[in-house]
Length: 148
Image (cartoon, rainbow, N blue to C red; front, side, top):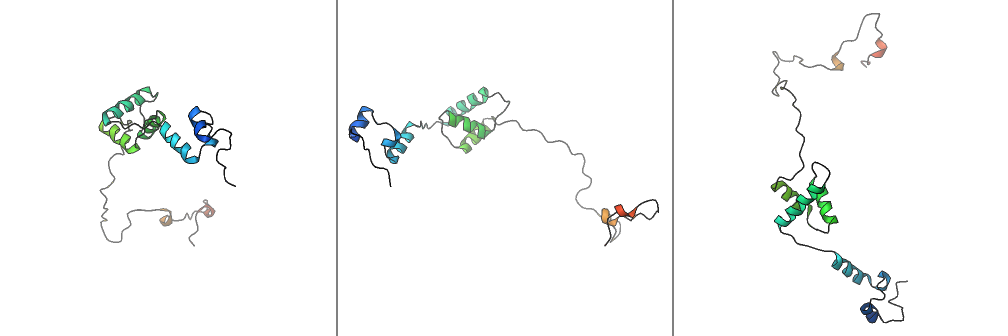
């Protein structure tokens, strides 16, 4: 049930030499894969050249800053293949990272992490389980959680 090799009237070698039969179906998968890899432009760039490409991508962007993943994707679209971690490292080393928002001030700390009560077994915090139930006749006790 597999694919039969080139059933055309022109022998395979002459067909390739003349440019005929360049359809994907005429070639084996291995040959097609090799052609596809040969078409991809693989450039090994020095760091300085890659930084120039990164700067160009950032200048062409309509946004104020781009992250390394988007820059890496844009480089791939331009047939510049490199590792995303390399793009991240170069952007960090050359100060090209997207600006980060500064955190907001939380104010002074309520305590330093240790709370010392004036005497043992003294409660210093509270929650709904320690709140007393209303006892006045005007307040309905239906709205309060049951103690059971």
